[in-house]
Length: 66
Ligand code: SF4
Image (cartoon, rainbow, N blue to C red; front, side, top):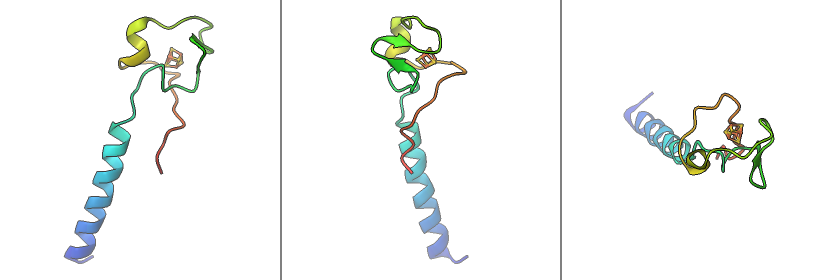
């Protein structure tokens, strides 16, 4: 790998990382969230989970940008 290739790969990975970091890990972006309810827990998630970061083992997103 030469310097041009190394820099191209680093730039590509940097863009991918930025896109991944832009995905909000919250209920709104979770595939289990549907019309105000969590399908996994059959309940309305706590308000701070809707937009805030969640530490939920069932969180899943289909917004992977690549
Ligand atoms: S599975 Fe977890 S992250 Fe997804 S909607 Fe339910 S509580 Fe939120």
